Length: 526
Image (tube, rainbow, N blue to C red; front, top):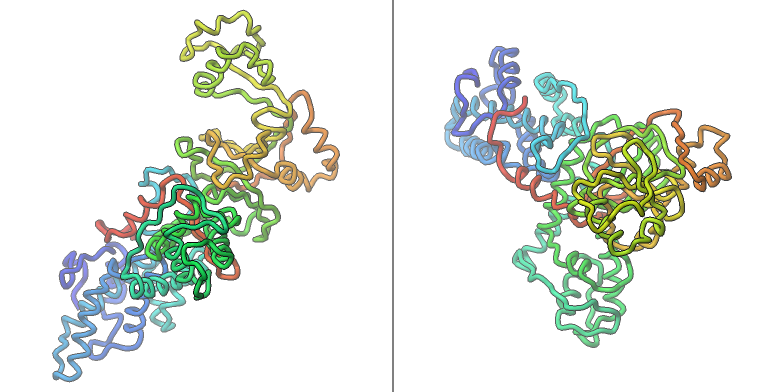
């Protein structure tokens, strides 16, 4: 057969593999891979099937020449009844397209289709990815007659990925039912006020219909169609659980947003998050690890793949979004002081002092110079001070009302983001916990401190409590560095296969979805 390097196109299909496909065919002296030039064996059909199945990985089968490949297969099938209408050139074209598809699928499964470095939302979780040697993998896959296994070996090493893949498969089944029942469209539900058990609303029948579609409510005939009854409430609570809402049965704006999510919407969310998993370093699964999913407002401390602590967290507001990055936790600080960032001093502290001269004393704050010397605030004319060129810093001293709480956990990074306690404990009861300036406030600081210091027997519960009540900071270096991954996941499945979705609080999903939906536009990295 001719060399694939002679042309960038085969049957009007752009080839997206360059280096690997050239090396692969050169090594085999341009002999065919998927056939003997006379018949198409089972392995060629298997490869076509795997291209079709790639949609359950959140990828688009048509990105991998599926339409052209299908046309050639159909021509081949017709040729069986038409005296060898399938020519040698057709075998060669199909061979090259199948090989190019295998190479690009392998690359996308291993590295992801989207390059996170090109996204607007910064991604700073670095991975060390050895060269795949896809050409060798293809030789082995053909020899072993097992394309599926070859692809599965490239999946992210987290067991959650295969469960998410199964969840996406089920979501496609829901989508098929949806198209038949609703003709692919749901009218957007709207409410003016929250609905509670016993309330009436003219959209209640539609709400019931959607809960029945998701199998959260069995089919039944209500006594009053517009009344929010107890059977509906049970279904609403199941929906709320899936979407990370408070399972109170109250139909508020968050629940309405969840009810408005069609199977197509949830498929899109699943695609984006399966892509995110492909960007993660494979080795983090075996480590002692602190994983924060900002979209789920949750921190997990993982040891040998077991979650030994889960805690609610508060993360950055949409305009102070907590970034995605990894770093190593190396020390913690008991009874911390808080040096207020200049932006907060300018925009919040100085205006508060102007309104209330006792503000600093009430918050246990001091004015300090750059060298750390304390300045008497009464010597400053706060009404005339230039907030933008304020020559001092504001420092909050240790104590119960310190904004960092009684302990902070440090993993040095360029974003100056860290995990810390908070005096505002009531905020953890809120569903929407995107409330901070970017740092991560943890509901269970004492429990995390105990786990971090468990290797050192001198750190008893009593000593930890004592250290959290000091009048000055106490820095404690850890005996090892613990990876911290600040991540953003809006879809996953648990060990039972149940799907969970979260609101895209930072509007990061659509940018990824757009690139996933587009066909390849340039030569692959392989």
